[in-house]
Length: 407
Image 1: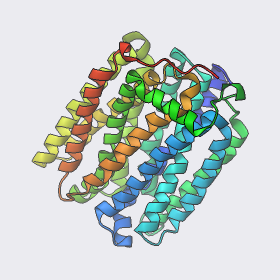
Image 2 (image 1 turned 90 degrees about the vertical axis):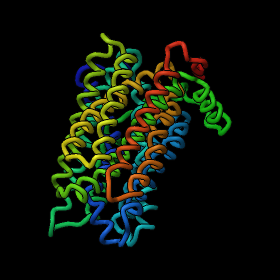
Image 3 (image 1 turned 45 degrees about the horizontal axis):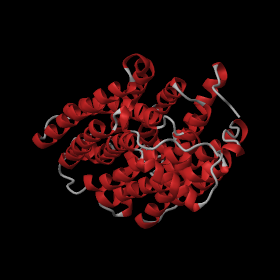
Image 4 (image 1 turned 30 degrees about the horizontal axis):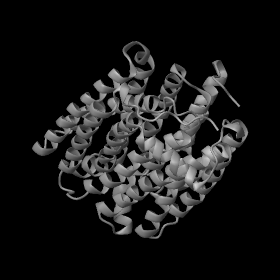
């Protein structure tokens, strides 16, 4: 059992948990440059291809809701190893998919199993750290994790290099990554939730825990903030492969760079929370980020309506993703305060809501393939709703339910 490790042990744990967390972003982002190729080979339109992204996001959401409570009852290590093994099998299914139906199913299974890395890495952080150390450590993980969305489309574009490989190679690569993660977890990650701190694994107990979380107004407010902004960002994830490549004529490789550079933006936002959170305060910093995100998405929506130049999409999206780094780190730290032995369940809701909202948002982007307007409107709308939740539900006095006592 680890507790507040320092030095090399702290860095090692951060890298290990980052490796688990990146399984979700890589699973989402790595195949984005292949959207046009998948559409052409399988004879599918944009919305049908985006449905594979939707199914993955639904899998990520459902998986976190299921796996989080299981880990509160069974521990973190065992469920994680089982899920990553199943992720490898799901990746192979996607690589062999003969049509969109099998691909959509495989992507759901990929999302469901990859969710273990996302939700259990958060639970491990809460098991090991508390107080300001929790915020600083999670900010460190987010900086490392930001490399994943930055690198994933670039790697995906490289895998799609003309005349050498096709889109199926991306899923073979994900299968190999999953196999490597199994080895690392088996060798390096100890169990962080001892038996005496586990919540009895009954359906009734899980429902009571979830009910208590949903009655905690402050926790729910931060969950809505990250859910709406992060979920809304999937309008950008699903829309830019077609907007950049089909409307603005960039190549898959250039798209990978334009998309991937936003990983730098997430790094900047996450680092800001880690450095400024103790001095400025996490909540004020988060509020500024949400307001700035709304301003940036207003520019994106206006550019889409006026069919403006590509730079007026790329720059405000970079600003928006910087704010996303603040939101992902700050919302997690604030929402997880006081959750203690129900950290798995609390982390599962934090992770599931963005995926559910993203699953709704992603196919809506493809309703009109001739314009970027759907993408801009969705980014603006979810940012506005996120600001509303921030302003009305997250005041420090809003906590209405005390944390569960340890069993």
